[in-house]
Image 1 (tube, rainbow, N blue to C red):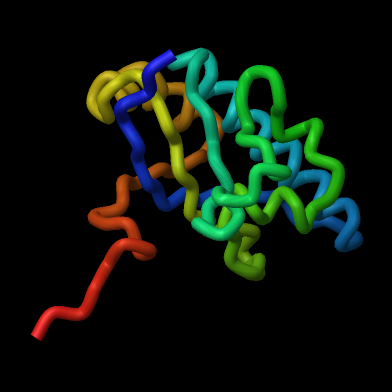
Image 2: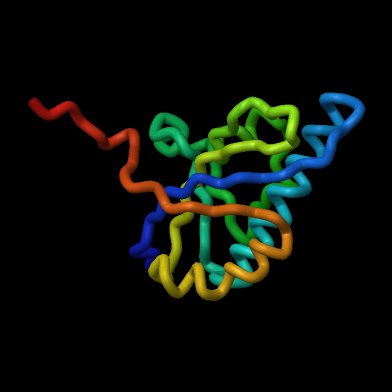
Amino acid sequence: MIRPYIHCYTLRLKIIKSRSKEEEQQLIQATLQNLFDIVLQANSKTIIPPFLELDRNDKSVPDLSSAFQVSVVDSFYSLKNFFCMSPRYEAGIIWCSIILVQSNPFSIFMEKVKYSLDNQAFSLWPKASDIETATDIG
C-alpha cells in the first residue's frame, strides 16, 4: 500500500483528573487509542511511526497500524515513542506531536475526522515543518 502523505501534527488531549499516576497513564492510553480508532475509520491504512528519527530507524520498534494498535503497546514509555508528549498540566490538557502516514491528502482526511475529533474534544493542527529536517540559514 502506497502512503504518499506524511503529516506532522500537534495534538491536544483533555484528560480528566485522576488519583494516581498509573490511572492517569491508563486514561492517556485509552484516549490515544480512541483517537487512533477515529483516524483508522477515516483511513484504514494509516500508520503512526515513532516520532523521533532514531526510533524510526530502529527496526525493532513497529509502527502503530490497524494490526498493532495503541492498546497493544506494553509500557507508557514505549507509547511516548509515538507521541512526543508534554508533561500534563493542571487543567488536564496534554500536548503531543504526532506523525500520520496516510494514503489521503490532509484536506480529505480532515473532512472525514473533524466532527469525530470535535465530539471527543481532540484538537489537531498541522505543523508547518518537520523539526528534524530544519536547518539554520544565514
